[in-house]
Length: 207
Image 1 (cartoon, one colour):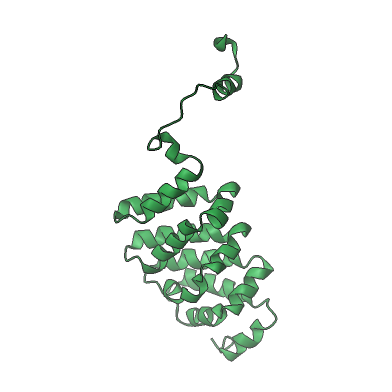
Image 2: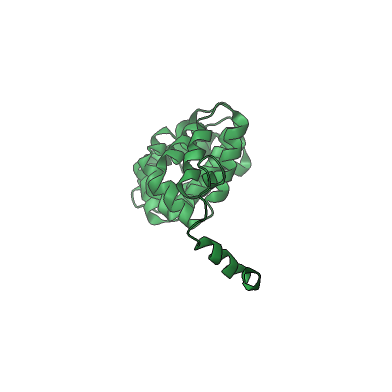
């Protein structure tokens, strides 16, 4: 009878069987449901740089999916904590670049905005926007531009005194491309009422 079933019904037929054996814990099902997040965390804590980079790339791809975002932002925040840790502290340029890409993807999605703030990232941002690697600086500032597309994001950055730090970057950033991004970010934050006073106090007009 099975050979007469369409593909979707054939799959359903096997799913509904009571005697289907479960995948072993250490085999294929590590890629499904919550097991995947646990494996990601294990890999991000590994000392093998190539494994960390591969994991970061997979997470960045994952972050294009809405349901995945909810789980990263709400249920498995430890993964995001580790990404930000690598972004700030890792000495491997490629790891920081891929961490910055993952951070940028988080910033695009509304569900993860509160999570980013709750991780106290903005208190540690100075070392990231001063990173010696141009791609790290570029991806982080592009992420922040995404973050301020909502009014609340603009207010959050202003409340955390990010405008003053960004004005300093406008004054001393060597890359023209990144300088332009910092100016775009500054102009977005200036939509907050009190931000114009902050900008004037920090000589933004003169700069």
